[in-house]
Image (cartoon, rainbow, N blue to C red; front, side):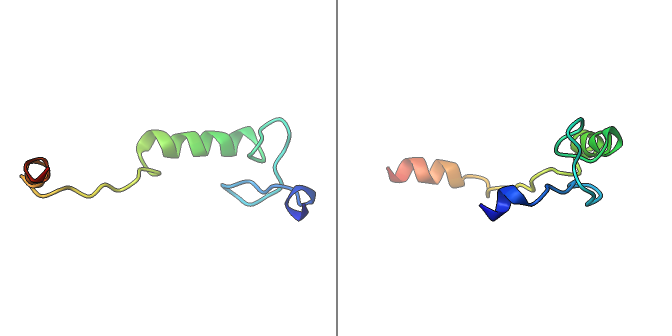
Length: 61
């Protein structure tokens, strides 16, 4: 319950979030976050499998 009592912080700048731009503090921080998503800054790194490893798994079954 302590989580609900504490005000949320803007994930971009750390200021208190506003109701109009929730979970951000301002429309500017919301736009910064959107820009990061669109440019791939938040991309999850992928690991490439070795060629043929998927085929080997299917043959083992």
